[in-house]
Image 1 (cartoon, rainbow over the protein chains, first blue to last red):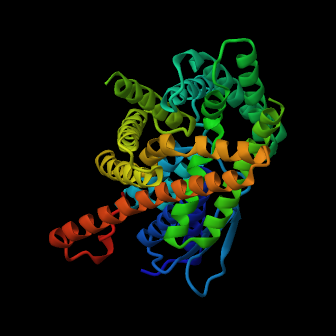
Image 2 (image 1 turned 45 degrees about the horizontal axis):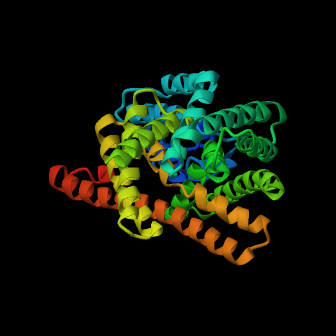
Length: 251
Length: 159
């Protein structure tokens, strides 16, 4: 069966939407390409070409056709969306969904806000900071200061990122606040060791996922994505470092 | 023993809480916490018995990768869902902080040393994950060859 041009255009649209959601949600590059190719292949477009970098996708249904481009401006980590797109693509591979059904489903996913409530996120950041303190050989007395610094730091990051949109700045200011809170805890006598408090409270901001994804992409042969993600991670680390450095320099 | 229990509990909570920050699906939070806990305690014990941090990180992340692959197979989720919360405790945040602290106090020699170590550890974590993925692929591939030799397209079953 030969597909009409219109059908091919819909399939390409579907693949691009799936890829866009996955990149925006922080999936690995190889998974994004793999998912797009699989969707295309199961709808009868076996020779599709895709080129994925963190800031955009280029996709073409075959070698003669014109390529389509999607620009991705902002990325975050939302693994629930990755998992949903994954299961939709699985259903497509099993032949359970038509192109139109899959498109409606994906459009719904793209619009949905699946994140956990804000208070829960902040609570978890605080809890994680406290637990990291113990894991890094801190003493239980510093648990509460680390929780407070980590929670407030993460809250500040979320709000600043929402209103200012410059991630670098938001990270720098939040880590500065964390440093100040830790110093305050030491001077007021609540805390004992400023180093462990700061390390464990900045952990929610540390780009651990980005670094690991960057190296993974490098090993998979996605050199462009790896460099882009590495640069992103480096910038984040620099922002955190300079925020803390301001505090450390004055102690 | 008390130290180990303390580490087990805190690393479980920290990994699961991190999973929530990354918006891991609700049901997978607990499994992510488990993978983080096992990986961290393995690393912790290796480091306690004097293995250097880079090697210990590689071994622990191979284990986390293996757990993640197994979970991905059982629960039909992308493997990144489990690996993200698993590796978070291993990320060398403390080392990076120390490096930065020495940079600020103009102590560049030690700062570069620490930064290189932090870089090697994060490379090691990723390498460990890749190693376990490659192993899983080899195992799945050899098993699939026996079961369905007729379907060439499905050798690399998605995790």
